[in-house]
Amino acid sequence: MKALLVENSKLFQGLISQVLTESGFDVTCADDPVTGMDCLSSDDYGLIAVSYDVDDAENFDLIKKIRSEENLRNVPALLLTDTDDVAVRKTGLENGYTDVICKQHIDALQQYVKDFSEHVLIRCKGQVLYIEDDFYAADLVRLYLNDIGLVVDHFSNAEEGLVALDEKEYDLVISDVVLPGKLSGFGVITHVRHMDNENANIPILAVSAFSDSARKVELLRHGANDFVEKPFQVVEFIVRVTNLIKNKQLIDQVKRNQSQLYKLAMTDQLTGLYNRYSMLDLAPKWISDAYRHESNLCLLMIDMDNFKKINDCYGHAAGDNVLKEFGHVLSDAVRDGDIVARFGGEEFVVLLKHCDIEDGLAKAEQIRKLIVELKPMNIPISVSVGMASLSRENEQTFEGLLKQADDAMYEAKNKGRNKVVLFGAETNNAKLSATPARQTK
Image 1: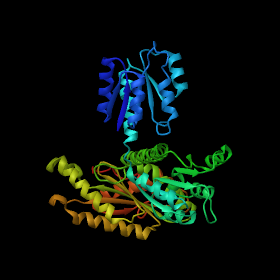
Image 2 (image 1 turned 180 degrees about the vertical axis):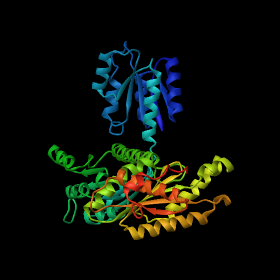
Image 3 (image 1 turned 45 degrees about the horizontal axis):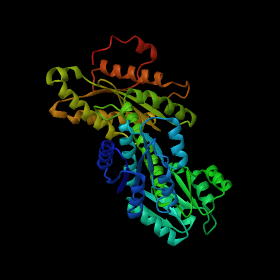
Image 4 (image 1 turned 30 degrees about the vertical axis):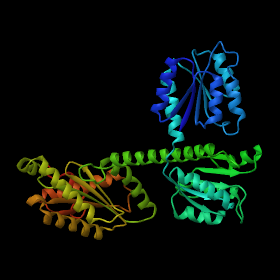
């Protein structure tokens, strides 16, 4: 892309030319506005920078010439000044300059040129749903957007376009206002904004030959993110499109980051299972749902027997590997809807939804046998399992259910380990409170 620089100081001419060249511009230099006007008639420029001369009474003749020419009317033009004079800035903007930058602030000029070149040399990945009944206009838009890297699916009516939106993920919807069929562009916007999935938030760019303010306001009020009047300036259209897509993709990235952070916060990094905080967050809701829907629920407290000896004999790295394989077995043994969490150290909690006592005991016994058969790193291991089930007589909290399963698990320890014990099956609460001191794990 070419840039025209009108600057009478050889020092600043060299400095500013370097800034423009570093951003990919082919720079033509002129020493005065008259020479600059001659350059305008002989070439096309994507950016124009003009130095302000306090001694020149015709400072703004060049910008007036630029804005009067059809092919130059929308070209960005910078006024470069020697000072930060507010009056000069105001006059420059009023006469048609895009921006006014002090030459002493070379970093501001570098940033402007860098941002401009990035927008002009746009490459943007994304999927666009385009609804337009004018096939000639649609072909042009598709060429413009394909040229910057976007994939465009074009439909001539709203009904077909909205079917595609249900079947495919898009980054932007562009819709004409006047369309054949039952739905207009207003109908497209309303339909999208009332969808019950993530597509309800997709950016929408409305295009129309109607330019009255009332119609624009209504389009925005219905949920359009932006509006472009037809026939539109290509550069303006592309900038609006890419801004909407980039903003949407940035929001999507933020959501993915939040999801990843949530996963990290709720997951045990060693085993890949839920962690203690996940169980404390999810379990009370499940228990409340079970009571509300009168469904069964069982909780297993599983503790590896003599895990300290494994660490002492084989080392902590071996102990970590044992826990990883142990976690994999637990995860594979339960249904997708159940929760398995590493509650702390070598303690694991399993919450079994829609599971009665008989099925819960069968699952606990299955897990116990799988662990005995596991032998990770050829190390024999076993577990003690305590199980508790929801009581229909007295509504329980998660903490109460967890304590019952924990008490049952310690009873399994006291009975020699490698066992499954159901809370309340052989002893009542009074007997549990009078049991001997708990054995070490």
